[in-house]
Length: 315
Length: 288
Image (cartoon, rainbow over all chains, first blue to last red; front, side, top):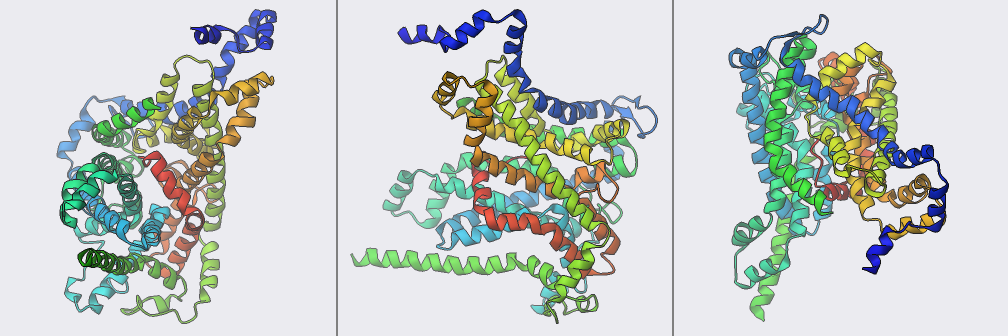
C-alpha cells in the first residue's frame, strides 16, 4: 500500500516545484518532448520503407511504364501470371531454390552442427564454414562464375582430375543445371548462419534427457533421432522459417552470374520482378510479382513472427 | 571398469575421426577461395587452359599489380570509397535514430509504446522487392536519384528496425534506479540518454554497427536501382558491372576486383568474428 502511494508522488521535490511554476507552454513542451525522440526514426522508416511498401500494392493494380501516369487495370497483372511462360519458369526455379536450400543448407547444416559440436576443433571449423557469409552476393556470383567456366574453371578441372570428365557441363548455360549450380553457390554463402543457429540450439539443450538416454544405453543415432531432434524443435522452426523466406527472395547471385539467362531460363521471382520493372519498364507487372513474393513470405513467417513477438512481450 | 574405459576411448577415437572428416570438408569448402587468391596472382594467359585451376602462380607478387589494375578499372576505387561512406554513416545514423526511439519507448512517458515499436519494426517484414519501384520514382521526382545523400537516407532507414529491436530489449534491462539516481542529480531526459544509456549500450551498439556495416557494404539491389554514376554507385553494383564487362576477357582482373570488394568485410570477420556469431544468437538471426 505504502509503495503504491509513493509511486503517485512526484519523483523529486525539485521536479514538483518546477511543475508548479511552469506555464501552459512549457507543459506542452514537457508532454511532447518524449515524442520528439521518435521523430527521426518514424519519419525515415515511414518515408523510405512503409510508404514505398504500400505504394507497391497500388502500383501492382496499374499499368505503368515509369514515364506516363499509371492507369488502373485491376487484376490484369495478376492474371498475367497464368499465361506468362517466363513467370512459370521463374516460379519453378524459385521452388528449386527453396528445395535445395531446405535439403542441403538446413538438413546438412543440422548434421554439420551436430558433428562440429562433437569435434575438439569445432571453433575453427565453425569460422571456416561461416566465412563465405561475410562476402557479398555480388562477389560470390563473380567467384562462382569463374569456378563454373567450362574449360579452365575449377569444377570441370576437378572432374577431369578424378577421371569423371563425362560429368562435365556448361554449368551456367544449360537449364535447369544452371539453377542447380547457382543454388550450390547460394548454399556456400548461407550455410554459416544456419549452422551457427543450430549450434546455439544444441548448446542450450537441457542436459538431463540426454544423460538419461545415455544411461539407458541409447546409440548415437537413437539419441539424435529420439532426443536431440525433438528438443531442438523451437530452433528448427526459426531456422526453417528464415531459410524459407531467404530462399524465396534470391536475387544477387543470380543477377551477377547469369542475369537470369540464357533466355530467361534461370530467373527467380526476385529477378523477374527486377527485370520486368527496370529492364522492360513494365512497373505494374513487376510490382505484382513483388506483392506475390510478399504474400508468400508473410504466410511462411506467421509462426516465426508469432514466436518473435512472444519473446518481445515477455521482456 | 574396463568396459567404461573402452567406451571412453571409443568416444575419443570417434571424435578424432569426425574431426578428420570435417577437416577434409573444410578444405573443399575453402576451394573457391583458392581460385580467388591464386587467380588474382596470375597473368591473363596464365589463367586460361585446362590445367590452370591447379597450376600455382608463377610470380605471386603479381597480385599487387593486378590489384592496382583492378583498383583503377571501371570506377572500382570510387565504388569502394562510396560504400565506405554509406556503410559507416548509414550504420551510425541508424543506431543514433533507433537508440533515441528505443529510449523513448522504454523510458519516457509516451502513449502507444507497443504501437510505435511495431510500426517501425514492420519495416523489416517486407521483402526488399516491395520498396524498389516507389523509391525509384520518389528519388527521380525529388532529385535524390543518383546522389550520395539519397543512398545514405535509404541505408539509414533500412537499418533502423533491426537496431530498434535490439536496443529496445537492451534498454529494457537497464535498472530504473540508474535513471532515478541521475534524475535526482538534476539531469534531464536527454542528458540521461546521452551520458548514461548510450555508454551503457556500448556492446550491443558495436555488434549492431558490425552487422549493419556488412549489410550495407554487401547490398546490390538498391545500389543498382537508386544510382548509376561512378562515385555514387556502391561497390557491389560496380563489381557486377565490371563482371559483365570483363568476365570474358580477363579472370585475373575480375577476381582481383572481387578480392578488393570482399576485403573489408572479411577482415572485420577475422578480427571480430566471435562477436558476429554471438550477435547472431542474440537476435535469433535477422530475416532481412
